[in-house]
Image 1 (cartoon, rainbow, N blue to C red):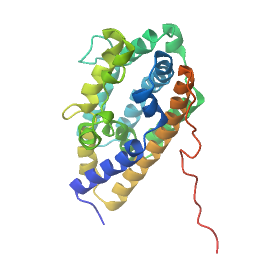
Image 2 (image 1 turned 135 degrees about the horizontal axis):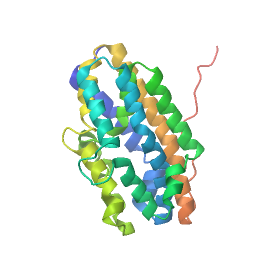
Image 3 (image 1 turned 135 degrees about the vertical axis):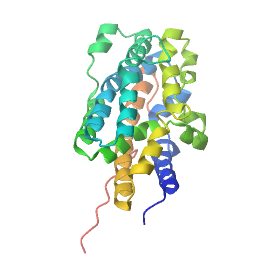
Image 4 (image 1 turned 90 degrees about the vertical axis):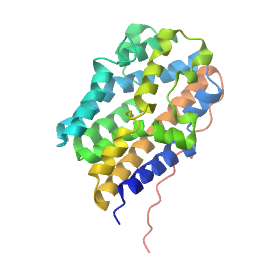
Length: 261
């Protein structure tokens, strides 16, 4: 049965809450409860590689999307990411590099770093889904990550869903190093921001049950990929801090095939 627009919005939020927030990842546990500069750098380096590629996936979806209002939104998002972030004096990606640099990495190393295998796998998935899936499913998969940190999700699960400098303030970093998180908070958690607008677009253009189910399946798949990445990077952050990392065993449910009679 086709969901109404409001029902579909709630289904999206239910799915993202379940997969992103109901069971904290190892990385979330680390950032909230065990944070040090050494572990934050592990996260910062991998996130820099991911963030450098993110605008490309928006561009892939834009090229396949037939709707002007959605293309305008995607292009605006890319503009903020790559041309001019209106909230900070440096570029959005460059501000993230500033963050990793102040944590101790050499700047040229950050700029040339290709990412750990698990980060390359996450990037490859996003590249695949944004290039090969119909625009609506690709949009759901890629934009769903921002919805998981948007205003509607913050209202559901509280401040832990908000992208914020408060996560890293205990490290005593400079304003320059924390600027990225201010811009990310405005972009994702602000009124009508990148965390909310995709809900409206998905409710508008996913008008059949088949389309809605396909969007939810794409979001689920993307979040499952994210959890693998977040658990592994979180475990490395624990190790860099000198702590025993929680086991990643059984963090992902094994496939359950239907057995032959």
